[in-house]
Length: 361
Image (cartoon, rainbow, N blue to C red; front, side, top):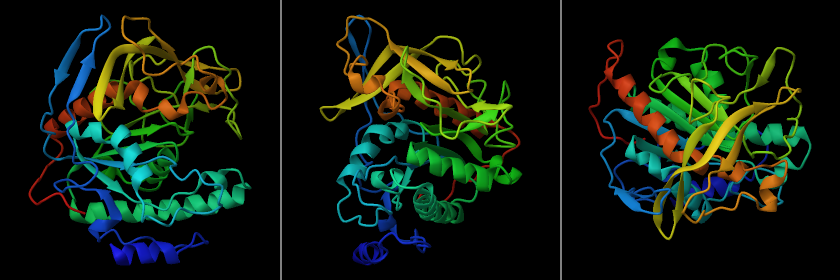
């Protein structure tokens, strides 16, 4: 631990940072089978529309399916550069507990630390952002390589939100999109709150050449991506927009077959040290504008339950939309998508699965 912290403090965010060594267990916030922030109860309390409650105890994750989760921007400082000091991991652990830990119901969870860019970096010129994101991705790629070396034949689920979605997108494009053998190991990818595009009316042809958007529950080797907004709110034109023939990727996690159809979403919120699901709390559909922006438009469904989030709050009506809730608003749906894709991957006769060995980096 001391050596890792020293490495990160010395590397103060300049260009060309050498990647972290992920052979060290301390370079991972979470690994299966050890006591860390992810080793917690994943019981889900179900709060039904009529106000009644149920409970879903933890279920063993399918053997042979791993989730690699890349967390969003947690360094909200104005300082420009990469986050390099991991002596205090509280903020990282908080978002991981909220967004990633519930997926332990359907996969073994791996969470690498990485030197993401700070919020202040996004406010600077593109050159600063590009350099910082390249440093961040070098870490994520190194973590993925360490994972691959230790686990050469398990099913892979990639999950990322916001800056984490950018990292997942780069990993998919750089490794999976050009490697058929690696694509065969891709169970499903969730790139949430990112900025991906696709051919208009198509499943590929934009960000990815060979990796399609998911079109059916239980499909493997595909990606789910969306940017969420409150229904009726202003939809911002993404910068720099999309070229002719391409549009923003929007996959409705409640209805993979028809993204434009209104579908029910089940949120999972973490509060008072417990996970609570709200079946059908939201309904959503992908909507598009003339300038080829497409977003997942969210609205609350009235019920007897007190809603944990007020979608009418002013902060959700800005161009930032409901970005901070991208994962939680549909987390039960997303977990189910991973579960079904994982079972399909495991049962596929074209794949040979060997699950011997302990899950370590």
